[in-house]
Amino acid sequence: MLALTIVYTSPPEASTVNQPSAQYSSSTATAWDSLVRAYSTVKAAESDGSSPQAVFRLTGELNVALGYYENSTTYQAENNSTLADQYATLSASQSSNVTTEAIALDATAKTQTMQREEITYTSAFIAAILSSAAITEVDRLGNLARRNKDRDKTS
Image 1 (tube, one colour):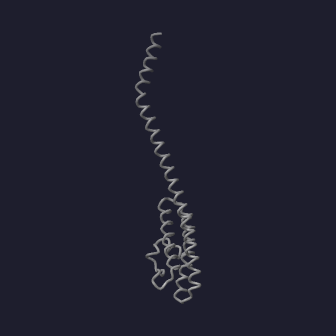
Image 2 (image 1 turned 90 degrees about the vertical axis):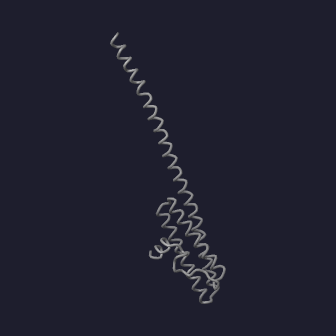
Image 3 (image 1 turned 60 degrees about the vertical axis):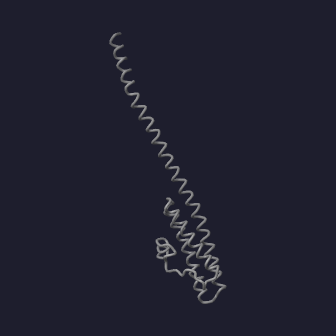
């Protein structure tokens, strides 16, 4: 849960995770880029109104990718490029999956927000029409009621 909180509250650029440098392989650098992209899409989905449960689940998956990345950099530092590349590939794959899910989640959240706004604006428009009709027709209804009273008196 602590790792989840760390990734969720601070961007990977600001974390203490080893960022790729010249000493890391291209697969490790690719894994890092995938992590950053996944993090950004999860944050976008969250800010656009996605459910906290879905964001929480994606954050957990992102933490798994971060763990793979950390393993990759550890093996890279130990000059074990085979395991480093395997973990970098796992990290990039997991991050890509998170990115794909977060993009879909973000699109759903935006659609739901737009639908809610359409309903709100349509309701406000209908209420405005009804109230303006009621205001303009009040005088006519009053005059009609008076005419009916006068007609009943004369009959």
